[in-house]
Amino acid sequence: MGVFSKTCEYAIRSVFFIAHRTASGNKVGIKEIANGIDSPEHFLAKILQDLSRKGIVLSAKGPNGGFYLDDVARKRPLSDVVEAVDGNSIFTGCGLGLANCSETNPCPLHHEFKAIRNQLKDLLEQTTIADFSESLNLGITKLRK
Amino acid sequence: MGVFSKTCEYAIRSVFFIAHRTASGNKVGIKEIANGIDSPEHFLAKILQDLSRKGIVLSAKGPNGGFYLDDVARKRPLSDVVEAVDGNSIFTGCGLGLANCSETNPCPLHHEFKAIRNQLKDLLEQTTIADFSESLNLGITKLRK
DNA sequence: AAAATAAAAGACAAACATATCTTTTATTTT
DNA sequence: AAAATAAAAGATATGTTTGTCTTTTATTTT
Ligand code: FES
Ligand code: FES
Image (cartoon, rainbow over all chains, first blue to last red; front, side, top):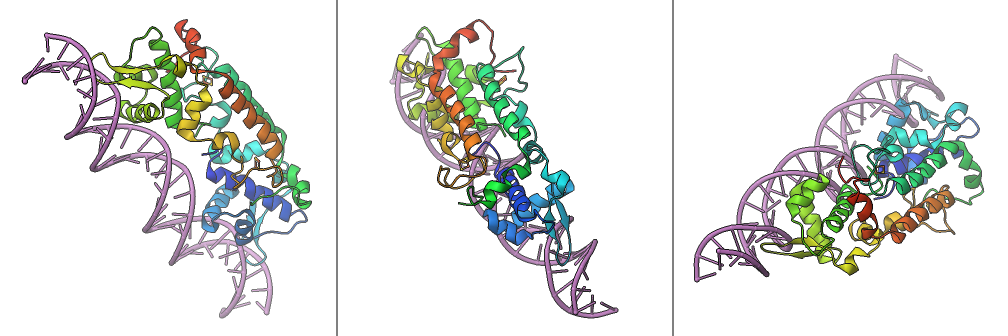
């Protein structure tokens, strides 16, 4: 089990892929996305339907349709994607699973854990979906092994 | 879903509890532990059986029996507990779920993610089970809400 | 030796995450 | 209007995690 759920991993990889493939106003179909990020097609379809409903990605039916991002969507922080799929427990929850993480009732790892958790939060809040398009264009980074 | 599995959360909380309650050579029973960390008794029993088989905790059957830790077990780093339960993917796995996290085939988040992942690794490797007994004794930290 | 205690082990069940397949709806092209 | 396209929606399946209950084994106390 990773930091994010499998669903969330596919979600992040797919928005990166869509951003990268639809930079100049075109759209990309579910099959191509699923292949591009090495995910099960129908499972990814569910995820993108959900992201579409929540306004994280945009979609169009019919010929020449597919998924895409507009300028607003491109500039969304990654934290919005994570929160849409996995909720905000990764940003606020106790590392040891206590019901309420707080300064007044901390678990033994609270202070150390909170510092690390906040760094992950900062990373995801300060980088946008579009931020990684260039390294993908250059082939420096990958979305499938 | 947190950083650790529910099973691992219970495991960490229980070793903290056992360390705290068995400081002077005594033992503590499963019921008391389950109540002390607010976990399902029989589920925790399975976890402790596993930790016992792996040598993370010690146990004794019969009257006055229970779980305990010796000096060696007390000084084990938390990373041993986590690795025994959740494996090492939290320390080495790709944040976006790619099959192999590496410098030569990095995902877009690789460098940033790796830095955070390594901090968690360092935290867990550099603190031992016994390190938190004092703050538990003083009631400064808690193992149940 | 018998009774009591407590962990170990086994069988089962519910909930959730992940995945697959089929049908429907909306849109565009012809 | 008809045909083609592609996402949306629905139904079903598989696997894993989490949780419960019962029986067995080992140990100690009486
Ligand atoms: S209480 Fe556990 S991380 Fe804050
Ligand atoms: S390749 Fe993704 S974190 Fe290293």
